[in-house]
Amino acid sequence: MLKRNEYNQAKVVKGDHKDIVNCAVKDESGLNDFQKLPNNHGVMIPRVGIERFRVPLNYRHADGEIMNHDTEASMYVSLSADKTGVNMSRFCQVLQDEASRSPVDNDFFKRVLRRFRSDLRDYETEKLIPLAELKLTFSYATKQPSLKSGNWGWQYYQCEMKGIENSLGEVTMALTINYEYSSTCPCSLSMAKQYEDDFRSGKTTEGNGIATAHSQRSNAKTTVFYKMENAITIEDLVVLLREALPTETQSLVKRLDEQAFAILNGENPIFVEHVARRLSHALDSDERILDWNVHIEHWESLHSHNAVAFIQKERQ
Image 1: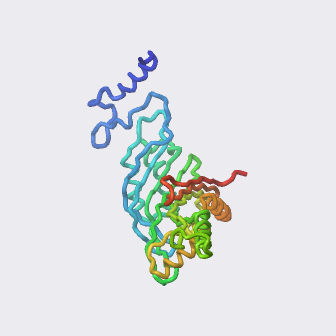
Image 2: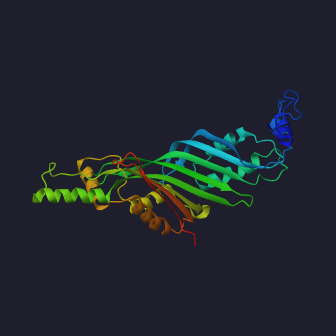
Image 3: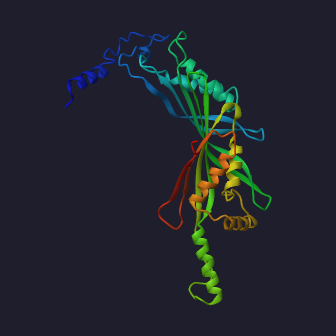
């Protein structure tokens, strides 16, 4: 059973809109506007907004080309203790209006976040909302050259761009990329080669003299934080990751490329632990990256379970 004070609180919350027809606040069309009613509960909400708002947005690529990518937007502001709610449709209006003016870049984030803080106020005389956040989730396509054949294909990266503006007008940016690569197990490779040597020397007659190391598609979900005035692009981050992990999955391969990929995997046998340390060195080497973290996952072809590792920038 509810205690008396809990019951009273529940009763107050339930009775927020007991006069559902005769709201004291009307909008410009004369319709009831419950969102602008004063709130008496004294509870601040750190983030309130909408998620999974689908919108086609233009992105400027490193080669200067502007491409349209289907995007899911998550948009939030903080809500002070005296406010009942926010006008949710304004999130969508602001985002679509700014998207009609320019492609997504750092300036785009800056304008959208400031407008969230301004346009989602109930009245223009109020101070700017203390905090606003915009997160865009999308699949980013780039041209990937084949390893040897001179062909190319489209490589897609699942990405997330996030910006947060605080009460001082400071914007923190974060970029997340899912980087897929092939990982060959060092132990499995070693045992396969040992077996082949033993078969050739006559130490064993098991099998047909050929053994295959287990390897699998793998993913490094990498998030980096940077200042808006010293930005790192998606292409920049892909180059860093590719240098650390050259066995990136391929989009278009001919036989020449397939053989080259097999050789590349043989040159780079890696555990998740190897990947974590390689990425640590690579991400620490770029001065634009203020902070970072990576979740690594190898979708094992040997096991029914996955091998994983998590690493982040060491704190000084």
